[in-house]
Length: 112
Image 1 (cartoon, rainbow, N blue to C red):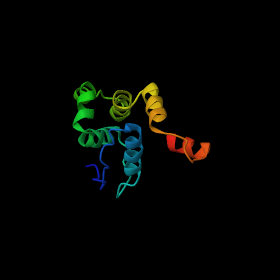
Image 2 (tube, rainbow, N blue to C red; image 1 turned 60 degrees about the vertical axis):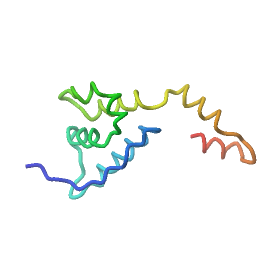
Image 3 (cartoon, rainbow, N blue to C red; image 1 turned 135 degrees about the vertical axis):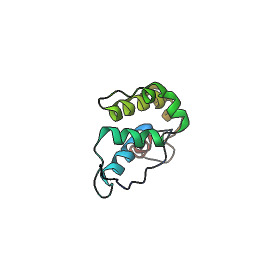
Image 4 (cartoon, rainbow, N blue to C red; image 1 turned 45 degrees about the horizontal axis):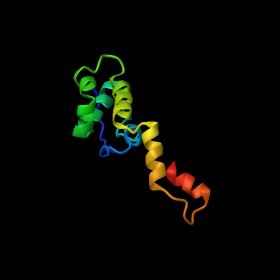
């Protein structure tokens, strides 16, 4: 029987799925009594904590996860389908920020 690990999964960040996966993977590393490395276990946690909108976007992957690397596949698809495209991200950054009193390096850090 596989050990049960205690983890506290962060809420899904729909505005930045890549950030959420970074937070999720840190949670897997900090799991007690041992870290979570099994792809299927990671997949199950991920599916359980996706927002309904994100789950709908990757419905096909959830229904047919495949037998090899289901978590990696789900992660790739959630980021691709739910995240902003590069052009959308650039437009959002340029529209929402102004230099104002800041140094260019400060503006750059905010835009990153």
